[in-house]
Length: 202
Ligand code: GRF
View 1 (cartoon, rainbow, N blue to C red):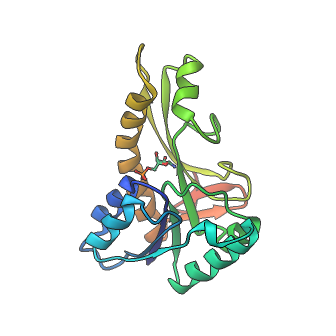
View 2: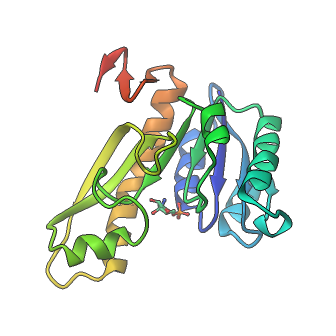
């Protein structure tokens, strides 16, 4: 299976996936696309010998034009699965529909709680004692596609958003490669708005 990863930043989730699939032949990361030229994840990809592309939004007048170019670039990699790993752009409906059931994202909250940004601070401000991350199929509804797997972490009194984020990231690095593995093993399917694992609802 051919895995294409989209990033904007540090790429620690990308690293976890690269590490998980290194030396395996049934599935491999065939490319990494970043919308930021200085994303550290690009360094990680190059060090792993993975092809990289940069598509900066400044070159395009509108989201539609950017997404049309992005879709064309993504198709060159012929991915079986598209993995959004800290890709900080909202994707247009056309692009999302093109990869329906073949594109997943990781979001740093226990969805459906805290869609959007600043999730750690929002969880702290709400007085939550529990927080986490969710891997979900991408649909046209932002952070709204069917959830595949979640990991929970505690929030302790006095925690900063950075401390909570670090705790969540440790969990992200174990659940994301696992979900990618399930998909590549043909075990995971999106059916309308729900998820099947081994043909059964999760
Ligand atoms: C992760 O926390 C992920 O949940 C969010 O963006 C962050 C990406 O981190 N969508 P990294 O680039 O994988 O280190």
